[in-house]
Length: 588
Image (cartoon, rainbow, N blue to C red; front, side, top):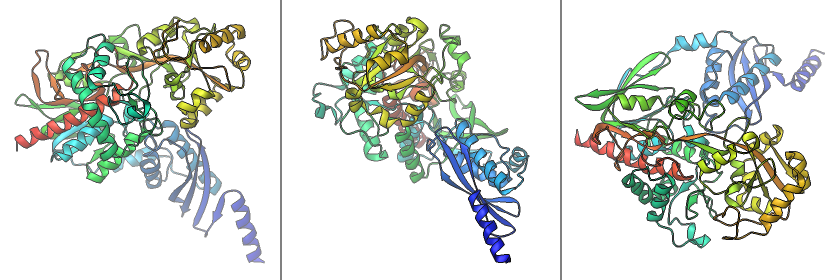
């Protein structure tokens, strides 16, 4: 009789997600809602405390959420508590995970500790307060990883520090396309006349001749070697049969990573750094560059209230990105970009390192040039990667149903044109023919779900349905599409001279998404030379200080052309790391 009752009890517990192995050990399942769907866990409790957590299901970004399922999971077990700070930059993933554990505890009727934060603070850190390296790299995005890996391979003892809990920064969340003239895909598309010189000329003109020609030349000449290095050494995979044609370029030359985001790069960079044994220390915020006898010789940092010093024999590489997520700083240098604008940038892109560099003697230039990305989500401000169909023929229309700008124009030109339209927004419209080329819906299913749920996107079988959804006059919409269909092919756009040629939109199904401009890239920053050395106001080298990526200010002039960011971070990250390593070797 006792055995029959126990079996029945276990069956009931199993139905509720709770299984009792013994009086002291209970296993329960719990669910929470993450950023990209449900997070399901199985928690084992022993003597009323969390003994183990197994993640059964989650669809979160693997880089942004990594610390959620490693560090946060570890801390929940250590403290027997969900009263913990979320992982910065992975807020929704953190909350979903903590809620799942809390849900499991409730099912198991286990009371968790209410003072997890205090327990963690008391535990402290095991890091040595003073550490010696040849090269210290600040910022674990694409430029930082490139610098650290090349410094290591040049024989330097290197460390990579990052103020955020996870690596990646803007390099992770971008579309991550990379311009490289004469790349291996261009011949497959019949593009045989591109060159580094043409790429450099496009970049110089695209920035209104405000960029440094010598730095731009280095960018363009180093692009293809950097792309091959990423492909062959780092292991980055690129789409085999397509390129992006970004606005301002005279040729289609942007390589597309598999997945169409920076996740492909950052996961491969992280794996390579781990393989090489390069320490990557997160939650470590650089506060001040150290100068000894006139040269930058290290950096003072803080982590959870404690101070750390990283000495650098060869020098420090700044790879900290721009300041697009610092609204006050953006408004300081570009007053017109006020509170109306959200940002596409990662939360750590706040620009403090620029002032660190300035205090160390580096000159900041072109700070007033702040770029908006024209096609962003009106709700969150993030880039609508799903609308990259614009590069393959999607059109931009206003609330009146009319085209108003060349879809492949410069980002600043398109952004300003959108702001002049009714409501300060536009609609991006494409059909299955274009979608079959871009494959953005397949590549970004989470965006598709989010945008359709928040009411900014829909799919329709005909234009009448599109008109109802957008509240655009159907007659006007049909007239615009009809005119586009009459001007397809390169050189036939009589209205806005679409440089790649309009694509036929006569057949559905149709896709449409609402879009606004958001703060995207800050062109200003540390003045550098082609060796990635920081320069002062007189053009002299600041000894021991290197910079790469968006933290620099002389590459893009007034306006960065699409696809040039990853070229910038890889080319100059590699140069900075290698040169800092050589400097360390010369000082041994």
